[in-house]
Image (cartoon, rainbow, N blue to C red):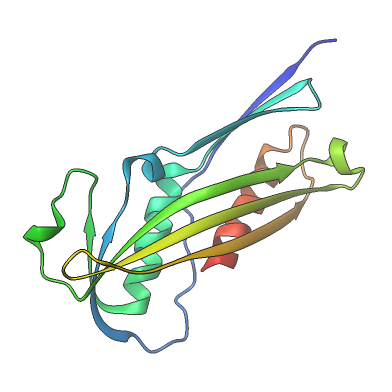
Length: 163
């Protein structure tokens, strides 16, 4: 039996501007290196190898979201020192879990993606103020021969669900 290999590289998804009032807080967002470079690799049913590259798109997506949510947002890179910035709260997202299903697993003509994010929130002194998970889900009907576009769409819908 010949194994198939599919690589899904996410583009920079966008979200429509939420219809919410901005929260009057100055926020710093620290995007960890592993968030920027998140790649999920999985052998499905021992024959199909899937590689899903989410990192950069997730980082840009959350940067965009926080910009819509808060009065002032500064994005800190992995090498930036938070002590060099003024803010009321620092948010650090991470991915705790990533799962997906393809039609050959479910006998349905759809791709599904589940992403579990962790949001760590720190005060301006660096003390952890909160930590919570956000579970997200996206589903897209199979289109095309490989299904990579459908899996991308399901991942984008999961990211939007998290937003």
